[in-house]
Amino acid sequence: MPVVPSLYKPPYLFRNNHFSTIYPNLIRKVKGVVHDRERVELIDDDFIDLDWSYAIDQNCSDLTIVIHGLEGNAQRHYMLGLIKQLNQSNRNVAAINLRNCSGEVNRQYKSYHAGASDDLDAIIQHILQKYSYTSITLVGFSLGGNLMLKYLGEKRLIPSQVMAAVAISVPCDLYNSLSEINKPHNYIYQKRFLTNLKAKLLERQKVFSDNINKEEINACRSLIDIDNLYTSVAHGYQDAIDYYTKCSSLQFLQNINIPTLILNAKNDSFLGESCYPIEKAEKNPNLFLEMPDYGGHVGFYLSGESYYSEYRTIDFLETYNSI
Image (tube, rainbow, N blue to C red; front, side, top):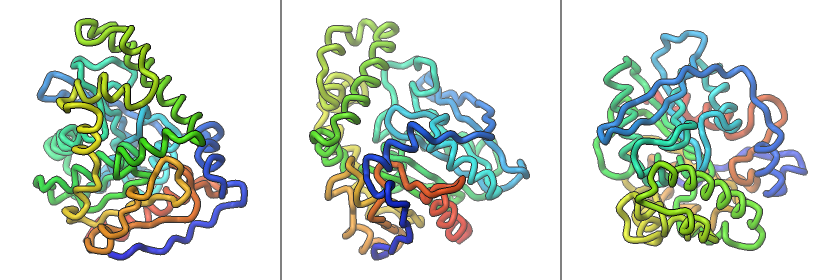
């Protein structure tokens, strides 16, 4: 499909990309979402925790699986905002806390990363074996969006119950996105990510002291340092560049064969030019690319309870989940 037009027109303040990005993270509070946690045991003796929330009709046949972004979890307010709207539109939701993101250090040295599509496949297979949903849709934010798009385009067998997907603020080209985050105007975000990732690694070091030491972690001065020291090594890649190259979803988009929307704001300061896959969308009838002028990174503020990304997600899923 060609690029689809966007109707998103935020209030004036929210046309600033940094304000649009920061406001929902610091100010927004979403109440009323109740989670039931389920621990899914994986074949490598590790686990992933799912946080379930339900529509009024808990026996509804529609399920949406939602995946958070870098250093996120199912309790982040961008997750809760979407979950609440999905529940109100009569969909049950399974929100994934990726490995090492549910408040407990995982059993294996490896963790989550942008290309961990096998973990998403394991979750979907678990749900299909245990529950009776006839329609499953997927939503991924940022890193979780890249993971989801990679899963859909890897030429693996996608279950017939998986009907449609939405990726929001997704870094389709990981190295291109990293290069943008490293620019001076993004220093505050880079610093926050680095601080959080180092703190998480120091927690893991206490459990896996034979694999990594404190001095190596404390010496990291950038995100690529983290990926060279830990992410690539723990997950079988040669180095950070090899990880970015093999895990970027951009190379898989042409293979996606279910209706999939990518919602990337043009003023997202985390995304460079190649994170807007216009040519891929024009050549794949299942790939829809919407690029609002505004929205920042996982922003898309609208006055009222629902943000534009939530409204747009539900509209897209309702259009395509039964085709």
